[in-house]
Length: 426
Image (cartoon, rainbow, N blue to C red; front, top):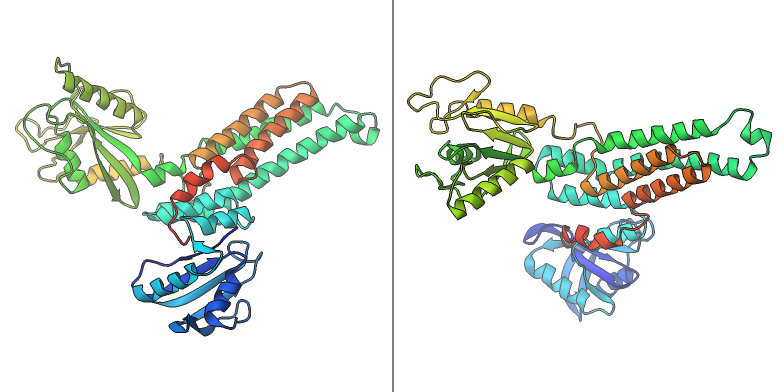
């Protein structure tokens, strides 16, 4: 495996640039530039030279593997953060045999490979790097610090305990101290069902994607209901074209917004109407599709809103003639004057609390949730079996799914996608 290097701090210029070097040739590379090595985990200043030329005077730190961030020999050069300095050191390192620049996320991938972190912690770290809101930061940090791993390990211990009981019964069913006088099978099936229910309860919680991708809010209603004007007012910018001409909006227009510590994805849609215009019919179909996929629906029509789990009936344009009276059960707003906009945001934020992971609860991402659901399903099926061999097989199926959550099995195919989100040097 090659020895890799990269700047792990922000792009220069900066006060300090930390160059990380990881791999079996890391310490030899430092020796080639610095001459002598400091004691492990003891910072020391060294003059870095290449081909007799002084590159920089840097702080050098060595972390022998396997007790390092990557699980292999790791060195850090704390350089002055000018572009020329960083470039000179990178050029010198690249000239050494066996060294190359790191790919995005390669340091973290090596930490995963060497068992320093598990897959759920790597996913949490990736979310932490992308976090834009406080809620995203807190949830990602919990995963990066091992919250998902600890929960899964607890489920795994329970499943293994049940499986061990089954194996004991199958291997020693004729021994009284194992089997006892009562039939143990109902208790085993009951324990299996309870574990399945415990796992399934976590899968029903709101997912991490709601925090990361934003709550999808769709503005819908008939043509000229004021959807585009309201979108612009909520986004506080001209994200959508506003015109008195009906049918101006033909396609979905999305505007990401962060408000009250929550990420939102506001979507303007074509007016819902019967039309002979081919293009407008496509817009209506896309609007209906957006409504079906929405986490929250803002309905601007005067008629009854479509069926939806989270709908807010809005009475728009209250500044217009004949619209000042607000019908019961509707929230009056004027995008032109700003009246009611703050109230609408508060209502949206209140509704969002039901859609977002609670601050003190474990949240799973889509991949983790699907695997956890697969484990729960296998346990429910196993709990319904009469034959202990079939119960044991169901437990093994569930354990394989749990192992995949933490990366112990069957995850190689998704690692490239995961680490592509990371920056170089992480």
